[in-house]
Length: 464
Image (spheres, rainbow, N blue to C red):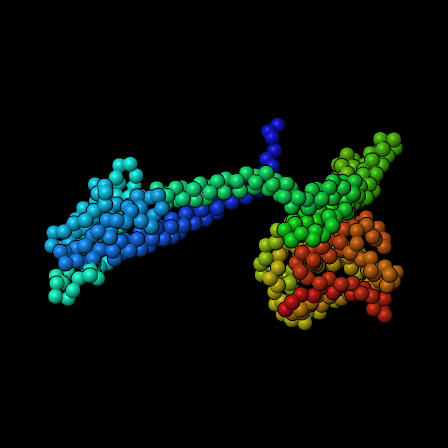
């Protein structure tokens, strides 16, 4: 048996992966923003130092006076960091740090103007950050107006190592890398516990489901207060209800089958035993005809029970078509002529509309009509009159029922209930029950009432 997957582990893993992805994207974004901000601040500091250095360059009586700049240490404004600079003027004068920069941006002298330009220079041992721009040196304070020479345009290049900046950026990168890893470890350790705690309603539901089974068929799950489990609980209870209905139908079918076939099986056995013990002298064909009649009644009973079970389960497939109700009633009356003549029962037909058509399932509608007519023909007193009327919205069968009372009318259409046994004509005793089930399947309304003249009214209504 393979090891079952853990929902808590899967959720925890997905949470961990999601945290890593989100923190990874956040770390990359933060790294980009921090790098840009740090480099911008570094460039601003570099430019401020370059402009401060250029402000120390003066134009003296003999040209550029660089003594004050040369007296300044090369790590001006940078602590222990050594700065490299180079100044070139249009009159050919130059000034550079000691040592002078070896690696400089290509063509920086020609492209220099008042707007500063920046570039990274690879000096071999360390990365350098360079800034260059054009400026005009100030006149020396000790120079007189008559002695002032034209002020040439100069260009300055200042370079600083990026070592400290790169170290800071590397440390930030490490922090931004380690943080998601620590978050992943913490998430993987804590998430299973939190997820199992969050999935506790599932465990509770599983404990409730333990009590649901054949030993407690009507047991239902309590309504869950968890929003995600409420639909599951509702659907499961609906499934349990349908299963209970199916089990009840099976029990009713088995009970009805035993109830309805017991008498006819006894008749068949009695017929065989009597013929064997006390031969009646009838021919074999006559005895077999009686056995065939009993077998036909058994077949009719089983078929009726199966159809009734399918109707109650809602699995009988309906095939709607246009049905002529008048023709259907006339056809069924013809099939009952033998019963009507044998019991001397008259039929009074009252059609209030010609050509009544229904969009319905013909076979189920036929079951309703034939059972209503057969019930009236079999149970009406001998010599009585049956009234049959139909119109655009209903059909009614009326017959005298002197032995019925109001309480007994309420039982009509229920299984196993019969005022009298109807052994003649192979009646299985399920007619009205089948009619009620078929009417329910066709969305028709079938009712039974008893009027003051002790007449039974079977009313079938539909939407016109």
